[in-house]
Length: 287
Ligand SMILES: [Zn+2]
Image (cartoon, rainbow, N blue to C red; front, side):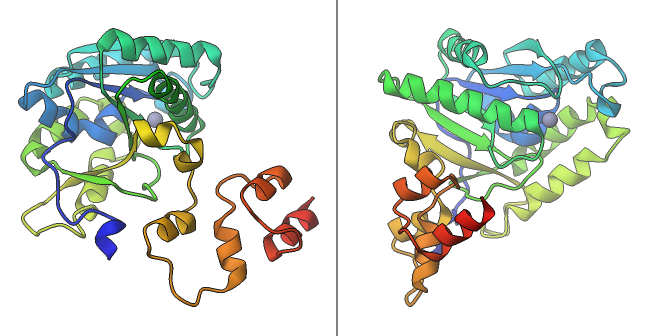
């Protein structure tokens, strides 16, 4: 039963012909999916990276954008990333708009990638969430146009709520550690290597003990991308779809589970929340 909720087997990588990772800041590509990128490189799969901002804001940016970009180039060399492009969008000011969505779309077409990697929309940092929505919308449009691609959301600042694939990165531990070590300016602020490898170790919770580190991904394939309700599907609704809803669950909780992510009056109605139900009343009170 629970294997429908999270994988109990690790994958060696996510199958694709080319992978393109979108990183909101220099280091997110390495922290979020450096192990997978190393695995792709070993398997002969070309990988590419787009670094959306050069991370020159605040304490993290005090070394300047040139130094941060140099760290990324060094990490990309370790991981075998084929091309790195810097968009130089404003750090802490990434906008999800037609311009950035069009740029993401073009990058996917230029690299011919069929595996697109981006942070999840559950992330904490605004640039991470903005990048997630830019890439979701760009891939959604390409899926609508009939392109067969998959978006895999990775985790950095917030653990994924939903995990579809766990990639065994045990064999790529040293490559990922060496790549993270290139981010000297960031490691002087926080021991990101220890932090991220703790998360990667925790992700082996449901895996055989031989797996020491795993990277988690939430997959939005072309079918899901073409059905926006599935992109932000509420956990309770998903469990119902998978046949895992607890028997005897109170009615109000079932109704609440149907609301998905959009807590708006119309959204509530559209999601099937009955007028006068507990959630409907709560929402009206808040207004
Ligand atoms: Zn970041």
